[in-house]
Image (cartoon, rainbow, N blue to C red; front, side, top):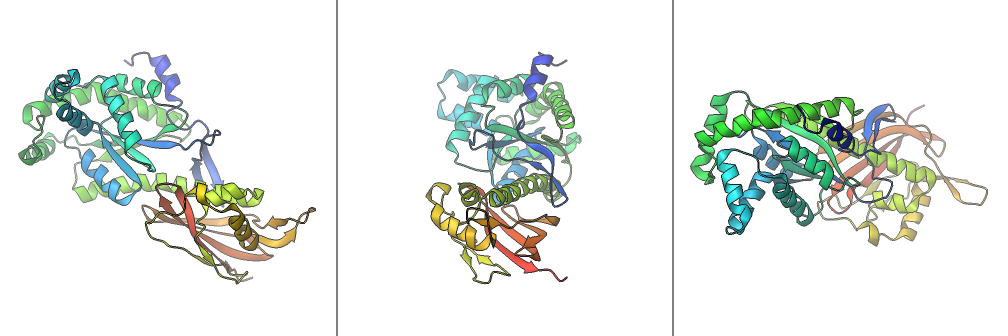
Length: 383
């Protein structure tokens, strides 16, 4: 039974961005539009990471950190750090008792630690909140105390391992070096009992949210019995879909900026460091495609971006006031390619300067600005 079920279901409607648009279309590619809220406030995206002890939550989260724009916030590690840093605080004994007994720390304690970690860990695309929500009290606390205007749940990665012997071997092996007070057989069984009693019903509830939420929230069930590499393959397939949505959203917003001649929006999505070839039929750009930060959106020279826009995003036609008109045309045959966890290409056909072209935009993710177009080129299509 779900406590306060009516209230919780109403609150859960805001777990994902209420302004997001499912089944958006770009050149026949369907995706979830995940642009910023109407307020323009930078949104923070959260992926919940759930599963039993030894299921691989921490291992897979660390791999995600290396390949994708993510920050790993392990609730268990935050609690252990709080216990060690403030051993005389009232929460220290409470945390230790909960960890050893395999029970769940009160939501106000864990949630405050998560909020502090998000505030101090720096900007990123996704926060991987590992080990939360573990019960309905956790979920209710999240939905009522995290700012719903700009902190959105994108997905839950649920690592499922039903083989007790595998979990036992993993936990006992980890316990040889971890120094954790809960890496033992007695705590393992208690934690599994808590998982079955408290966390599995939350997973079922989140699954209902995913199925009834018009595709805005994903629940990703991952078989965790295999090797690290086998589980990683599954993890990547789910994360890649989420990245696809965000890159296609960025590309669609860029097309909207070009069509409406919105130079500030255009500048926020383009790398002002790119150098542009003078050839107007096949326009190519190059940019410092390293992990060094591109200029912040606030420091971009809008006049310079307007000149780049006029030179490379218009076809010379002018409006009644003499302003240059952008050339987009109908976009067709779109294709998406995720090159790495922070690099992607979007290609499509459209008309530019009266010529049918194949345009490719190359995107890279930067912590301070998100997805930025760092390179683009147009190739004429044969008649």
